[in-house]
Amino acid sequence: MPDDLRTSTPLPGVDPGRQSVKSLFKMLEVLECFSAVDRELSVVEIARRTGMPRTTVHRIVDSLRSVGLVEQEASRERYRLGIKLFQLGNTALMNLPLYREAPPFVDTLAKLSGEVVHLCVFDGSEMVFVERSERSARPNNAIVTMEASPAHSTGVGKATLAFQDEIVIERILRQGLKRFTARTLVDPDRLRAELAQIRARGYAVDDCEHEPDLRCVAAPIRNSAGKVFAGISVSGPCRRIPLERVEELAKLVIAHADIISVRLGHTPPRS
Image 1 (cartoon, one colour):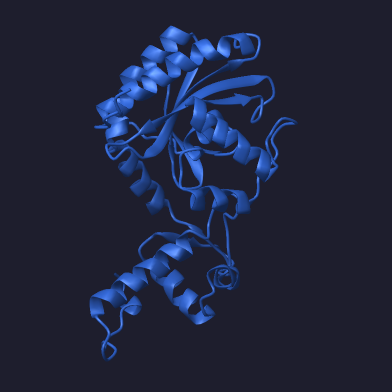
Image 2: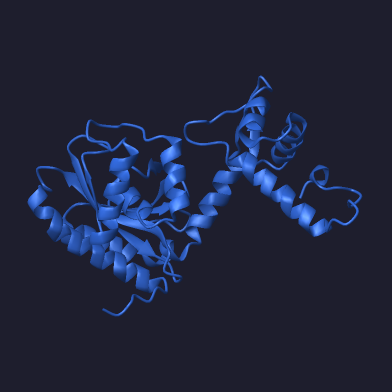
């Protein structure tokens, strides 16, 4: 941890280790202020969002900049996330058991369905693409393109969001539901009802909600603890995926999602 985020002389009665943990949480809180929408922020804006004093935010941002986690604009008034975070995130994705176990099943699902397959991980706010069926064999030094998509308007997003804790769902709702097409669910109550339906049937449908004339069927993927952290989907134009075909594709997608979950150590309940 940068020296200026440590207290040189421990406060009386305060565990130095606990102080360090608090400092780490503050650093994380600053980093989480940035998003795909808020790519650049000033110290004043970060202070307003975190509730921290400006001097504290300035000290934290300066420390993050010194290790490459944030970068400063030429004007020296605004900051953005640094390339170091991309490098760390890329390494984290490539080391995920999901990244090692899922590709064969992604390819099989694409062949069986005849459509494009996406595999995504939920980062707490958005869905991050890990694997696409149209990609050719990866070279050993492959770099994952960490493209993100909204959780409320995509099949993989809704399939994953439906099984999150209520506090996570409400946080997504408070952030605002951006409209992408005329069918995007932007009303919180309608989205809550949709998520409840997804939990009941085990799969989600993106009915032209993120892109016009694109229908998607998705299912959740669980880790060894049984927590839903990712999703897999089959997507295609509406002429190739009419509503009459959704249930057939849902069975395929759910089966492959369940197989991947088992490969990751999940033990499904006995029916």
